[in-house]
Length: 447
Image (cartoon, rainbow, N blue to C red; front, side):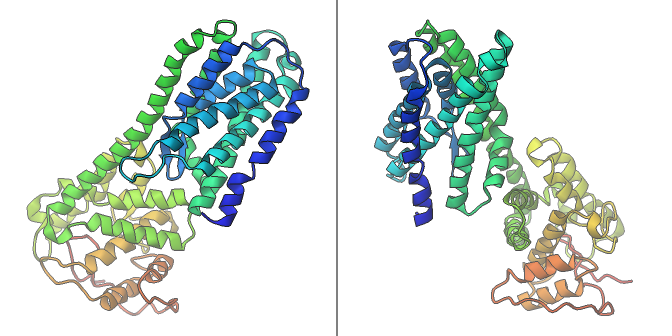
């Protein structure tokens, strides 16, 4: 852990304690129910022990429902203190537990300090909104005023908490905090909203009836399970689709792990453009399954040694469209399927299936095209042995600006061992590339 990250994790502790002391000045509107306090604190601690991994270095759970209920039910200082106590107990249990695989504790002490502090600060901000700036009295009496006030408090709690968490995750991974939020929100925003709604209902139902809080944990647990299932479903869907792509690779021993190699090269190239992590991941997912459509190509065509006939070539050219059609059935590939569809387009418009040219071809597809061509050239095929890297790079340079995007070729070349920046080559009379990037097809292109 870097000194900066350690400082960031520890910094919120003092403000969290100070906030509790300052909030003692808020007058209590009613006597606090000690039984309800204990129940909510215990339930919150239990909920914290079942986090869901939404993205690398970022987990979430259903504890915000308990935290919001505490803010709505108790005086500000009491609510913030109870939120902190609940998290200390929850993360304390995780600290005592060890991962059976790694033997490491499930929660470090410094994580406990940060999690507790940031949740207390978020709860304090929500309490200020609910009890002061946008209280039900300020927004109007009745149900509408209560809902509006509770909604604003929940929104503030979410924004403050998630902001502190994604900044921490960004410092830990070197990624953009905003991109981390976008990635996580896309998976769990609806469930998070439902959790806060459940928190409001928990406060309403359990007020004066503490034992009903236990009954309300059913919906909270259901939401927690739904969040877990949504993340799990996404991972399983991606895994299943990638397995189908691997089936294509396994049909031919010469193309074993071709898709994985293309994905690795595409990611390295995409990072040279400084693309956001979300876009890099989009390219990786598409590159991993770019040849999925070949699952519909007969073996006698896919494995043919020598030049394809016009009819066979026409059949082979259908695989981007077939792959895109398959991916259209999976929401996880809503954007990626466009890259799969366009990965055989050319900068000069002579590609397929739509004859796109230049910037009309998505950048991700241009990246995949170069990575695909490189792996095809540097791998053994039934009709030839693998080309030396120098020869393969020369072929990419020959097609730079005509078959492949010049900037993508340059970026890819920089990912090679011992690479140096390429000098721009503006000559157009150097001939056409010798390789037609079809994975299993090679031939000489003639004008």
